[in-house]
Image (tube, rainbow, N blue to C red):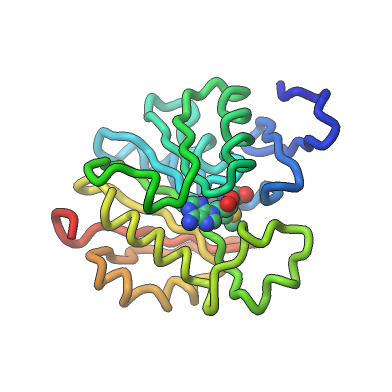
Length: 213
Ligand SMILES: C[S@@+](CC[C@H](N)C(=O)[O-])C[C@H]1O[C@@H](n2cnc3c(N)ncnc32)[C@H](O)[C@@H]1O
């Protein structure tokens, strides 16, 4: 159980468990359980290795993906508040996640590889951010076309996916996935599948080349 003494803490149901959060992080969105579930089902087929979640926020998507498995989890977020919540939630779930504070491109060593990379970057175009006054700007602002951070996630996947590993990238919609298709290919990644959910989309990426550029 999460500490109910904290006056600003709130609790969201996620995958039949509880996730703590507050106004410093994005409120957990129920539909994102679909990204966790997709990741969890992929883990049965993927090679050995750790799971990486970038832009983890309060940590729920990655935690639900690995719960019940023996996969080690590394979670990265640029917000110290998000990292604090991810740590607290991981402990509450009994998962020894390694939480790293920093930008996703700085928080990983060059030789680190992961079987699965889960990514949930900010993807609202900057001009639309004002429509979501309740959300921390740094959690949703994806730059001019909304895809600056998604491109960074592609870079992380290119550098850090293990052989035969896959990435699951959350986006606003499948149109954003199409916008990224060529840039993904240029990075040695192919978008093999996309699923639209009520609330957002997730695309699956595979490495189409060996080695790290
Ligand atoms: C859309 S929120 C997703 C949070 C969480 N996955 C959720 O569903 O609530 C994006 C997250 O990315 C983090 N972020 C923004 N820029 C980042 C960067 N360069 N590296 C790592 N995390 C970043 C933000 O702090 C925020 O927690």
